[in-house]
Image (spheres, rainbow, N blue to C red):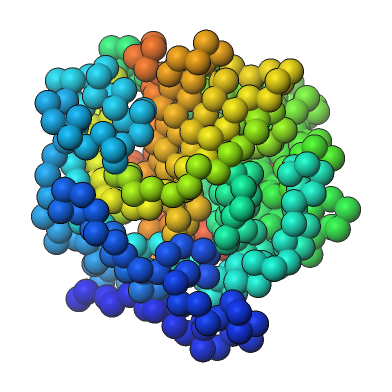
Length: 446
């Protein structure tokens, strides 16, 4: 039976005790998106936001039918007609067509604005409009412990903070998988078990005013065999210009824990095909770039990508030479905030410029174009938005990071062949993320 989305916005505006100036304008949602839809080119349309796709937490999985499950495909973009749709595509998407004209395509479907967040997070987002400020040259926040920090961003760095500090529940645990491919399409899957508790947007943890935190993270590699057993502990502060990210590693050979230097910025990751700050599309810090808000535009982006994440899809079906199987990816027309990041003079980074595209309904970075120090296009990253209506939460559940020059790519967060779903709303005290806890975590069977 089809479930009707719940209009959370209407409920909130009636129930919340907020200033009239915030409650009365019907043009914006609590997170700052335009409520009204819009007609787009090529017969496409962005629908109105009606509260997102929400289901009761006790809904049986067998009873869940997505509001887009019966959609017919509208059209397919190929290398032959891509120029007709260039105004709706990023440079990275167009680069994939140029690099793989015979195999890459984009399948376009009707748009559905399924994204939303729990009522307390929407309430906090509404209240943040007048109370949140940037501090320490934009490296930190003041005035908020929950909600979208800047529902009406006035600058590029405010928009990027909305992604970095977005709602992800109190925490989650479970397995994720990464594949680093060769030019011919060969790959090795690396499986990791994660336990993460968030500081910002966590209503169960009182933030330390002197050192507010983004997250505490435990991770352990469980496959392949030559890497299994190594584990890491991270303490990630909200303001990384004032407080160092603390990182410890447990080595299974020596059975010792040691502190290592902070890993971030353009330190290599995944065989050097991406940088540490590309994980989660962008995780900061902010101090090596100037961020310019270019505005908002309708674009074709991966959205509501349930088929891509299906347990019926094996990794051998998903992973192809040069790019993932395009038949599995659903693209829709959504409005994207566009932020241009230009490397600051005197700052070091392998990317001279980056263009970020952020979904107006969730503040997820769904696409990123990256340019080298010569100003030439180099890499493209794409995130595949998936809605969990019983949380409710839209997540960048899987990501691909393409190196156009080397014709290789990396896939993060694959879960197609996992038996158990990720567990969200995990609650744990700070004491669960100590070096002693890391030793216990590393020795446990996962």
